[in-house]
Length: 113
Length: 141
Ligand SMILES: Nc1ncnc2c1ncn2[C@@H]1O[C@H](COP(=O)(O)OP(=O)(O)O)[C@@H](O)[C@H]1O
Ligand SMILES: [Mg+2]
Image 1 (cartoon, rainbow over the protein chains, first blue to last red):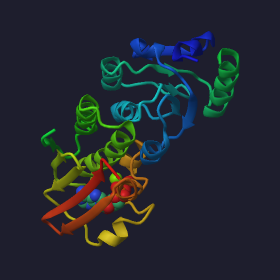
Image 2: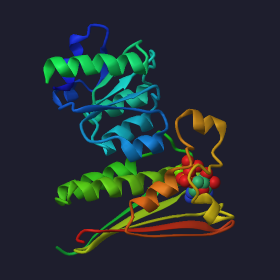
Image 3: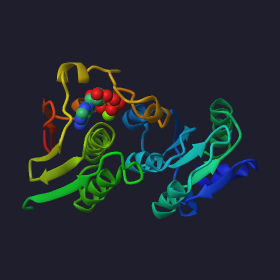
Image 4: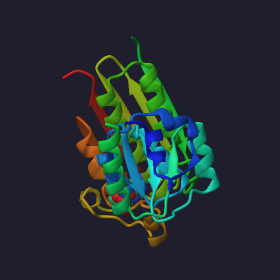
C-alpha cells in the first residue's frame, strides 16, 4: 500500500511532508531510541515514535522510511516540520498509542495490500 | 572512477543541524550510484559518528574518501577525548545527560553500531586532545 492509504483512517492528520504521501509502505518499526532505530528501521517502513525534534527527520530519511507516525499526540517542532517538507517525508500525527497504531496499520495493510 | 573526497565540519551541541553531514554524504553516494546496502552501512557509521561529535565533543569534522575499492570514513574532534575506549565500545555504555537521553540519544549503541557496519574499524583517543574514529566499508567483497 501507499502512505496516503493510511489517511483512510480519519483520526490521522498529516502535519508535514505532504509530497511524500505517494511512497510505498511495506511494514512498521516502533522505537524511540535513535541508535536502535538507526540500526533496525528498514526502507519503506512506517516509523512509529513519540520523538518529535528535527533529528528524527534525519534518522527517517537516512533509513529511507516510508513516513513517520507520531503516537500519543506528540507534535513536531517548527524546525522539524520545515525539514520534513524539504525532504518530502510525510509526518502523520494521532492520539493513538503505538500499539493501537500498529494494529490499525495492520488492518489497513490487509485491506490495501 | 577516480577518487571522491568529502569533508564536513560538525559543531558541538548543534542539534538543529545534527544529521546534515550524514544526509549530505548519503545524497552524494546515491548520485555516484553506490549499492543501497553499502549506502545504508555508510549512513549508520556517519550518523553515529556525527552525533557523537555533536553530543560528546568540542566539535570536529568528518571526511569521506571514496575510491574504486572502499569508502573510508574518518571522524576526528578536538576533545575532550575518551578515558577508556574499550569501555566506550561496550553496548549500553553512555555518559549522555538525562536531557539528551529524553531526545532519544544516549542508548550506548553508537560506537557498537559503527563497528558492526564497518569492514575495518579503529578508535583512538587522547584526553583533552582528540577522539578519532576510522571506518572502512569495502565496495567489493
Ligand atoms: N567523540 C567523542 N568524544 C568524547 N567521548 C565520546 C565520543 N564518542 C563517544 N564518546 C563516549 O563513548 C560513549 C559511548 O558512545 P556511543 O556508543 O556512541 O553511545 P552514546 O552516544 O549513546 O552515549 C559516550 O557516552 C561517550 O562517553
Ligand atoms: Mg553515540
